[in-house]
Length: 615
Image (cartoon, rainbow, N blue to C red; front, side):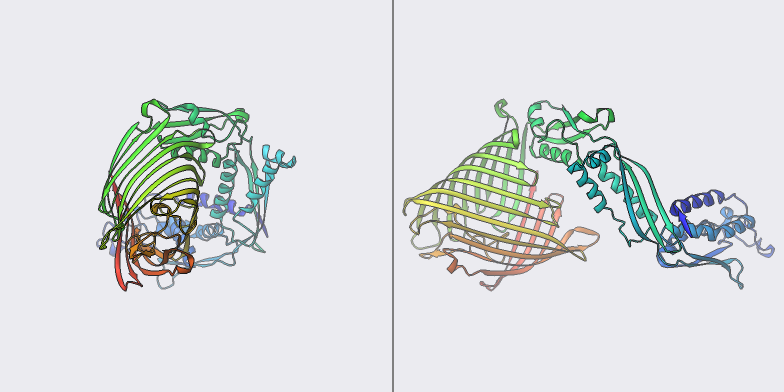
């Protein structure tokens, strides 16, 4: 037997039965002898027991009219006539409900308990599941014309729609899955630039004798919407041309969802707007040149932030940040940050232009820092001139930098002091492929740095150097609410042995976000009894974490192992091990991380705490 559109017919029957079963408010008859003692809200006069597999039992108990009425009592209960009518229609209604779950050969029997006539049993044998035997997609409209013309983009979209179809051959056929799959396909078609796409038709042909379903979907794509003018609203202090330059596309470009979201993200990353919406009105009459609407709300021109924090690396700290988004009327952002802490004191600043063509910014940056450790104090100054380019998932930085660093040893009988300067050309690249930038659980980040320059020192020879550095961090969901994280980090300064570069360009390891279980910057070579920065660096880390409680998904527990060190050369690099346990909490006022790690070389444990609060 072959049922055309059986799922749809089943639902229609279900609606009809439900409409006929609307109860009137009669009184439930009770035995005469019990009339005087029966309370006004008595237990149900009739009961129904459904015998079926658990998921189907829940479906029938929720949607079957007979089950619903059996739960009524007192003045809400139905009379005997209505009860008998519902009994007669129950098997058919149950089969219609079961068909929505893919059971088209279900056997349903309604039986009365001989010992208790008011008790009914609905016995269900669902039979085999109907499975998808095939799927056909028919396109109409502009997409179909482009496919006939063998346009590569149209062919790729058609193939993508087919390959993403979830109801593949052999998949159980359920009405809810069928509806969701149609909705998802049409959503993907609309997001590909066919914003007026409509479902022109669909059919599920079910052969109940073979338990197979043939699926057909007809999608009318409508026109392909292409970009026209960009209309900007909400500007007060900033330039509309700058906003348009962040689009990255010109007239005639298909208006896909990804295109608009990338544009919206670029505007948000300018740090000029606190609300950005990029959209268009899908009017088929204007599809060839559709106006793109950009609605903006500017951030305050001046903004100050006070921060408090603590890190195991540098101790407690307080910071003040100030941002001006149009200093002296220039199309630029001036940012300054002053930090005062136990071990670190710094002033960092940057003057960067508003982004222009190809998303470039020009920048001038400066930094003065005093960094103290158990063995030395490093005072450094830096001046940087360059350009940045932020594109989706990739950040690039090109700059020329002048760096000076003075290192003074502490805690030794004879204090030692050395200084070095360097002028270098640099290129930095950051690649992000993450599901969530703030709290990633899947993806990776890659940071690469390269520098070529000339170094000069008061206590060593001058000469050229090359600096290379890389850091790769990966995130994976492992199942059962477990998540993995791993990191590899390596760097090297290439130079003659008699050339000294500024301490800030060399490497040290140890501390939070490096090798836990050891003091900050303590894993480095020793020269004449004084800790010094190394020419090579290697660290690695692996971590497993999971939420501790379902009721508090933001609180995670973790176990980890770290290894690494900085050294004068690779032959002298013997990684130090650290391992332990920790807590992770994404709090409303800032991220917090608490770790306890055992330093294998030190044979002692150490806490690492990091928290920051911005006001």
